Image (cartoon, rainbow, N blue to C red; front, top):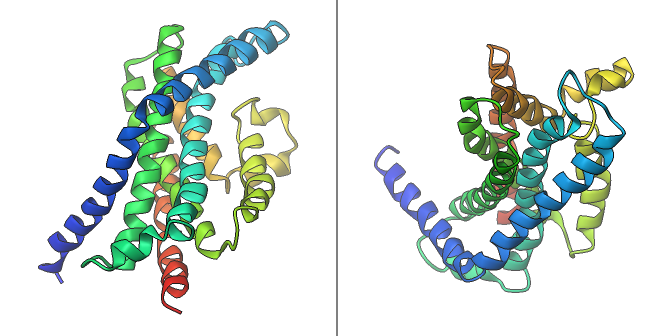
Length: 258
């Protein structure tokens, strides 16, 4: 068991390297999009809507929004790659079948997929961090923890997205996932407005929303308001990152080896 662990790690790393080589060819266009999109959101929401909102918890709306945009960019990028990207490699391109013709298991391919989607999400989150820093919105050295928090959140959404790809029969199925799943999670997480303005039952339900934990942890780091409560949010994100992997492996194995 222990002797097999290094072999598994090498196989997962090989899957990840394969995806990163492909991404390298498209890196410039991806980087431009990751930088321009948060800039547009910060200007449109921060300055436009911010003119109507005097402050949120003693801070400008722009300062309130920035950590939430880091989270939304990281999680959305991971979700997009884990759905459309994974499904493309699984079905039309049949890349999974090619990788499985080598000494790589389904579990190693799935974990490599989740790591790749998580890395792309982390990159998107860090791009927003750069833009927010340029606007002077980072208030504490704890903002250096943003990449690590982005990894945690992105991995969870990468895993659940790979799982969804395993049961989807076409790209159209992702419309249900994004509309009925991702959008409500994002809207009721505290990204765009404080949760304390909502009814109590919504606030209670938000504790079961992984996006809420990502946003709370991110704001604590960006504002330098880190206390023991952040461990609750980190624990929830770790749990969410691990839980989808086993069912994702089973679903994709069943699909590839009926």
